[in-house]
Length: 447
Image 1 (tube, rainbow, N blue to C red):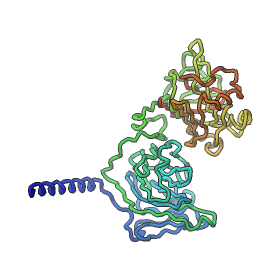
Image 2 (tube, rainbow, N blue to C red):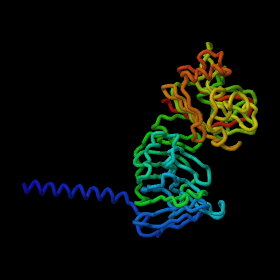
Image 3 (cartoon, rainbow, N blue to C red):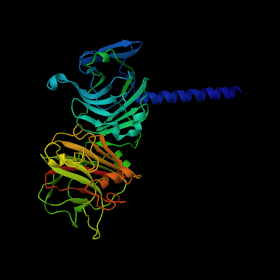
Image 4 (tube, one colour):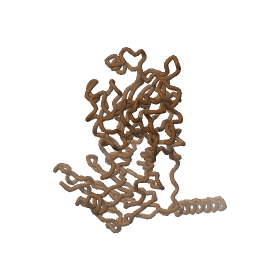
């Protein structure tokens, strides 16, 4: 009996030492001493930051802009973990790889932010680019993560910044994955959002257990969630594992041919500096060589003044086995200047709409300025549910073939087209509407 007890005791020590060894290799460093704000400085607004009972407490102050409690040190590659509890009626976030410089908007804090969003929108864990580009990874990209946040309770956040890749977790649930190269170093900061209404004053957010790793970093296993890759015509390793493929290689027209043609058009389309451009010279539409059923299609596009184009899908072949050009269309056009935006019904020919059938929910709010790049996406599920996105916002949702869809078709310009949009598979089409429009980073994942 004594021998068994001795063996058990030895085994316990072995397990304890192994656990300590593992923890030691991770090299966690605390960013908060639990007593005061040593190692931190306040930037921009004058919200109140104080330490109470071993936690940092941030309190809103009326008519103050966004306030930030920032680390004195800058960090490039790191893994950060912390716990927080937020007022259910308050917005906040965790800044990282962020900066405050006199030459940039008088020192306004700008950079990546992991969102804290207790509202019904439920975008906690998404990635926002504060005072710069706006949303990079809204949780419209990852519906499964919307339920990870626990309102009114302590929540655990994890951020991994390793090289160009940024990944976030909320209570252990993968929330966002971003590939970007705009900023690779900066401070970490705790945000108290600015307020302008008396009833919003005095709301609080609390933070504790703030720790960081900066050496011997080991990224977590690939989670399989959607990857927002801002590299041009590139695939990350995670995207490759997810089954994403490039439809445009950035060099030539391989994989595409002219609609009603057998080869890529010899005029009207230009490929230069990784950009596929329709030049408005009557080159005709182009379509993919392959046909697709359920898929997730990503594409970036840039409009010129007053331009019109579109991305069509489920474009069926005619009897000569050449594309007919008829299919469902993700509308691309200048809402302000192109007359087609005023036609149709209730805006169903505006940017990102399902052309002539369903208007986009946010045709202007989610759209970039003319001359800037937009990120479009079309998801088609196996059950015929379809979604349109623009710059991370889901703006159209419908189901092919259900009674509502059939009624919309019956009232559209496609009413006389039998089984319109109902092909089991079809080609992807980029439209030549006789205007100059640029495309790049065209990718597809079959679902």
